[in-house]
Length: 73
Image (cartoon, rainbow, N blue to C red; front, side):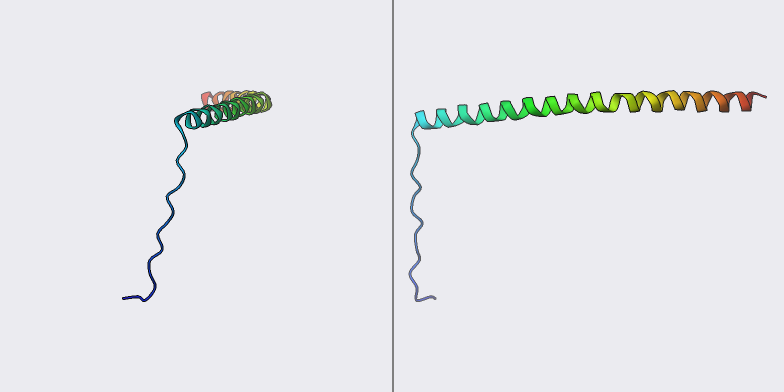
């Protein structure tokens, strides 16, 4: 047994319903803007990568065609 008395935590102040609704709306606006920024970043990534993907596909077709010709002989 300890000699120290237990310290009780103070009960946190609860917010009102109106404050809660305002908080939810604020958090939703922040979430929506973050998702919008994420979508813009993904679009930029797609635009940046598209030429490299096209080049890789064309090179793969070229290599496949040359290998296909070699093995047909």
